[in-house]
Image (cartoon, rainbow, N blue to C red; front, side, top):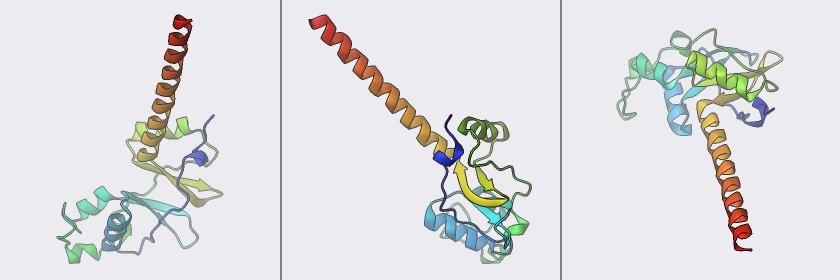
Length: 153
């Protein structure tokens, strides 16, 4: 069984509920990410802010060159998704994937002992799928080579 901790990102960027929407937008742009966990002072997940949340807030248009400074001063707490589901590092990757799919989430915070320890995103699942396809293709090529070798003998 492949577990969440084998795929998750552990160097997680997080925000406080009191950080501004503009700060979230800047971090997302700088780090090329679409989701940021929102944590309490004790590193407990209290929500998630997504790129879609930031865009809906009006803090920036589709172009990051056109920022609306007033709406950008809103606190993250006003736009974040609360009550988000999470996963545990030892949960199966399949279970986490099914949760993402069922709820149409783009990410799941990874929580252990009540604290944020990582994040797993839909992009991580695409990477896993690509690796599995490459492995399958490689095995098929090896089988074809073996068959051709047998036929030549």
